Every structure is written in C-alpha cells, then in structure tokens.
Length: 541
Image (cartoon, rainbow, N blue to C red; front, side, top):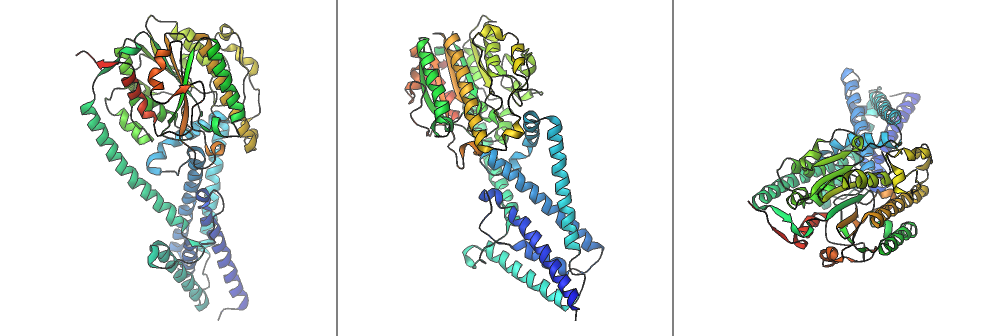
C-alpha cells in the first residue's frame, strides 16, 4: 500500500495535470464557438493523463512526454491561426490553402505596427509555445512515479473512460455520447484533413475548368468602349456592411449622399448595384483577379493555378480596343512577379509613384495622392485611352489616422504636403484595445475614401470616361459580425448616360445607393457584362 501522503501527492499531481490538459484542449474550441464552448471534458486529456500514469519511468517516457508537449503546442498554434482566420477572413483556417499567407500576415502586422513590433510578437509567440511544451512535458513525465496498484487502477480508469468516450463521440448515432465531453484535439486535426480533401477535389475541378475554358476562349475586343478611359477603382474594405449596417450607415451613408450630389452637380450620371466578392477580410488580389479574368478565384490555390495558364483577361480585351493598360498599386512594396502575368503595359508600384510624403501605418500613401498620381502622371501622359485598375488603400486596417482632404489637387504635387500629418492620430495598438472605437474609425476611413473618390469623379470624369468604383471585399468580422454578407457596392459614373446602360440592364439603379445588399451575382460576371454590353466582336486573325 502507498503511504497516505504519497497517495495524496499522486492524486494531486494527476488532477493538476488533467486540469491543465483539459483546459488547454477545451481552449482549442474557443475559435469555433467565438468564446468558451458548452463542453466540460476533453476526452484526450483523460487518455493522456491515464496513459502517462501507466507508462513506466525511463528515458522513453521523457521522449514521449516531450513529443506530446510539442504536439499540443502545435495544436495551440493551429487554434490561434484558426482564430485569426475567423476574425480576419470569416472562415476557418485551411492549412492546405493558407500556409502561403504567413508572409502576408507578417507584412500586415509590420505595416500596421512596426517591423520590430512584428518581430517581437513572433518571438513572444515562439517563447510562449515553447514554455507551454516544456510545462506539459514536465507534468506528463512526472505522472505515475509510484508504480503501485492504486496509480495503475486510476490510470486504467482514465484510459478506459477516455477511450470509450472518444469511440462514442466519433461513432455518430451508433453509440451514446458522454455528456459535455468532446475531442477538441482530434476534431481540429480531422477538420484539417477534411478541408484538405475538399480543397484537393476543388483543385481538380478548377484545373478542369481552366482546361475547358482554354479550348473555348475566343479573342474579343470592346469596341463599344473604344476611345473611352475605363477606370476600375477598388476601394479597400468597402462592403455592404458600410451602407446597410446601422453602426456605419449614418457616417458612410452621408458621404455616399455627398458623392451623389457632387456627381450630379458636375453634370455626370451614376448608377449603383451590388456584386459578391469571393472572400472576406483580406486577399484583395483574389477580387481583382476575379473581376479581370471572369473566373471565381476563391482562394490562393485558384489564383496560382490561374497564373499558370495563358488565359486572357480584361487587360487583353482592352489592348485590342486600343487602350493603354495600367495598374496603379500603391500597396505593392515588394517584388510582384504575378502582376506581369496580366500583361499590363505599365505597372506602377509604390516605389514607382514618386511619393515624397510619409506612410500612415499600413497605408503607404493616401488615396488622394494615388488619384492625383494617376490623373497627372498616367492619364494625362499618353495619347491613347486608358484602361486602369487602381487600388485604393486609405480604408485599409488599422483605419488610423483619418487625413484631411485637400481642396486644391495641384497642391498635392509629389505628396510632400502630407508630411504635415506625419505621426498624427492614435497609435493602432492603442486604438485596437477598444473595439467600438475601431468600428468608428472603420466608418470614418471608408467615408474618407468615398469622399476622395467622389471629388476625383466630379473633377476629372467626363463623357469619355467610365469610372467604376467598387469594394474589394467585406471587412473582418470585428466590423461585420459573424456570417457576413459577401456583397460589395459598385458605383458606375460617366458623363455619357449611354455608357451606363449595360449596368442598368443588369439591375443597377440611378444614384449612389444600391437597391439591396443581397445579390446572386459574383465579381466573376463583371468581364462577361462588359463583353455583352459594349458590342464585342471577334478579333481579327
């Protein structure tokens, strides 16, 4: 028999180890439930506690405990990634698809806070996970040092209850489940296996679609837009929530009304509608690719497969109609070989735009400079009509600071004038401690982007211009709430009302307000709309 104090020590260590394992494993469910879930027992915790009580002491037990600690730390990292994906992209993380995004997350953090801040955050995360793994190893390796009947019996009970519970949980309706019990570790792993299989099937389907499309694709040109400057401006994080959510509509809606009045006062015409974006919260390039290619580019895998084809896009369509094709991409600060695939005549990245002002957190330059650079250095500097994709990033998170708008466009020059607001505004890490204030700043930044775009339209749009302003995607769940609508507003402006007719035929209505936030039409239909609406004819051989 064990002495009383030995029994108490054994029971106490076992209970502490089980409690730590149980809390950690149940914590893996927090992203799924957006908080603490309804369950009380993680069945894997019972099995692990019992198993390591049963295993005799020795070198291999230490190795197995270290392995278990490392695996549980990795599961914790996976749960953190899942939480980030749910908050920012409104979906679960999918390792099969999302591992290339780690670099993008780093650049977002370093741009929003600082490079040292991003590095320190990474180091802190690594050290925290390492400490967790070491703690778990110490707890597990120390179980069952007293190899006597009591520990063995208790260990057997833990293993038996946990194993039966796991089998029952995954047997479906065949066996009754233990109440309030779950297998969080197994579930998160099985989810990733399932996501990977689904993505693998979708990969084959998308590759088949690309192959079929390559056989049927015909060269086209947009004769109905010959001689017209066509400008597609993607407004960052501008989704239907900005207009139809009562938290943001008073601020953003007022600017939208101003845009409508400003456009009308300038003698221009405007129609608006809604399209669905293929994603939420980020990865704007998927929306851009969907609009240009006429394909539903829902994830990074689809994007990379697209770039492995020779599929034509709107860029080639406008080449044939005599347009000079350009992309203005102020957020691109690193090499962007993917951009060359689209075949633009010119790509203007951040370093090509001659901006002499300061960056504002993640925003490399304000939208008003981007619009001025496009008008002054691109659109005026050529003898052909322009087809341009313009990325507008002032409404990108962290949504601080909100800059004033300059009345005199000529005063913008090289952007040095914006230096007077360098360092203005609250630090993002301070602002983001208060979610209500984050939402307030989101509304203000989208309103700012719309006002700048409206002023550009009123000043520089004429009868030989078709200006299309649309959101790239809905913002993150912190703004939209759970289960967001994928819709984004689309505004089409021109001095020639006839140029708007193809959009009216597809349900767009006069003015700045879409009729509804709901639509069944995705961004991938945009290219088809232009083909059908602007007298497409076969290109000459």
